[in-house]
Length: 434
Image (tube, helix red, strand yellow):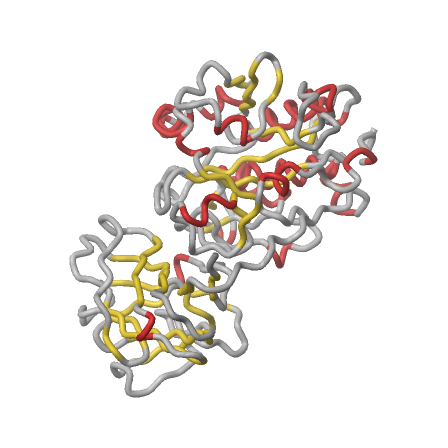
């Protein structure tokens, strides 16, 4: 067992990090219990290409081995270091970071804004004085640096319970008024879900971080408007990619009384092989799985509203765990929908499907975003998921993943957590809007 210590939730905005130099240094304080074993330090940082100089590190005033860049740099990635037990002490521990560059061309540290009394600080005189305000490279933020430590002792807390959107609010009613007739009509749940997926997939052009910098919020109507108009906050082209298709899909499903949730998946830590899909709850008749883990035959089924894809085996729609067991060739199982043709107009999408999707790479690690109440509680949504390496502490990963390179997260769960039916799934108002 082990336990992660963190004082932020990974909600960093990539465009507003803390640039480090020889003089401008960052300090993070973590309160720790006694430990008798080496610990693992995780730092979310950006190495400016060509990323030749390492990131300097001192623990409680003693310099440690420098941290090399993870790859060629050019993105906020997780960097890892081992901290000897005798470098740590019970109580407050200081972690100081800097680089030898004299200009802001070396390293940047991810910064989560919005903390009233942060345990992070910045120095402009090589550590002689510190401040916990006017932080970030533009000196306008107050927040916590994304730096975490995992100790060998202890255990992570249990994963949070899922939170669902109520289908009877005014925002849900207005969202229903925008949906296609095929999704509003009666009939099998899966047919309505497929109609909704096809509609969303063809509603806007996939726009990623290599084409835009303004991240669209997790608000279904705003995503639809900004995506279609190709114009968002401050008149800029908005980032509206796989995350946003899934978020809009989940909100639309819930407005229809169909239980749905977000499922980020990831191939490799720091890799560009992540994806963001959704899952819907189907009963035994539609799931085609009388031996499902829940015992009643129902199960969660993966739906990809970005690519308008569903996977089936012997006619039965598949869950993410079932997809993980298919091996490295998913092509015989993929059922493409009408929206796929629209997405394939983008050559990058077609290339990504071949390199990352059909070989199952992106499904190697699966997680859940426990909250689905994006319309009524937007304050719990992240500001830039997918614009850097995955970082949000909200994510719940499979228990086996803690020791497979994902120790920078605090929440892990067994299969029963992922398989559990949603509360009230069988009594959802599926005739909403009809």
